Amino acid sequence: MDWNARRERMRTVFGGDRCVFPGSVYDAISARVAEDLGFETGMFAGSIGSFTVLGAPDIIVLTLSEFAQQAYRICRAGNLPLIVDADHGYGNALNVKRTVEELETAGVAALTIEDTVLPQPFGASAATMIPIAEGVGKMKAALSGRQDSKLVILGRTSAVGITGVEDTIARGKAYLDAGVDGLMFVGVKSREQLEAIARAIDAPIMLGGIPESMQDRDYLAGCGVRVCLQGHQPFMAAVKAMHDTLEALREGTPPSKLAGVASGELMKQVTRESQYGAWIKDFLGG
Image (cartoon, rainbow, N blue to C red; front, side):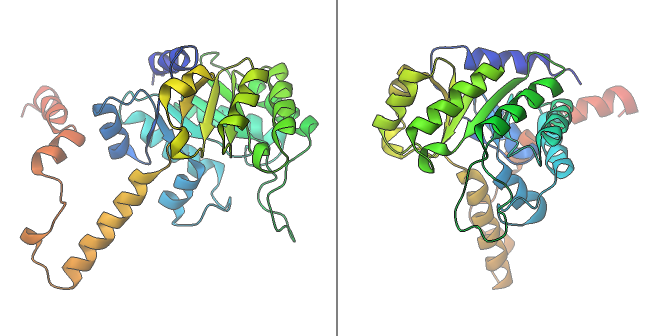
């Protein structure tokens, strides 16, 4: 498939002057809904990948091939530019290179590689960071794995909540020197932290996990933030709806009395029934 147009749109987002909130997606249908609603980009998180593919917590037991396959299903469902959280690249720098190759082939428009020690090692009680030099090696490997120059590669760090702002800035600068297109910061909890980072970093910024009180698009844009995550509530809402529907059916509620069920028209829209109908007519003589 041709992924060029969506990657160009993603580069426009990171090269622009405003901040967008991506739609958190997890499968083909959710990606189509986000696209239909006008989201500029989608976000597929590693945690959500683990939930949807394995039904497992976010403890890095999902494999690269499983994650890439789900990312491909999301990408092929429409034209929504997709950002993915590639975690630590599923291993060392060589694994990072392979990760970028697979996710680029899957059609993603942007990806992040982080510098946290993952998976959690034996005896660890809190998150720790890999050395900056190792992080730089991972970023260089990620760039080496990229074949399409339009693919956006972001260095990601959670250092602000682990080792502090000074180390966060040092890591960000080192990853930019390695050649990444921008940076993702996770764990920023205050305007003071963000503003200190923004003063020191001259590159597009993506944020994850900030307080709702900071989620002002104009303010964030002024700090160089181009993408800001709001969380992954759509998947959580889907789990709750499915749970409540199954529970109601189990307890004897008639199907016609269920609340919150998608209408037939909505199902036709998200499954692209009219498009498939046209193909049936064109190719099967229907």
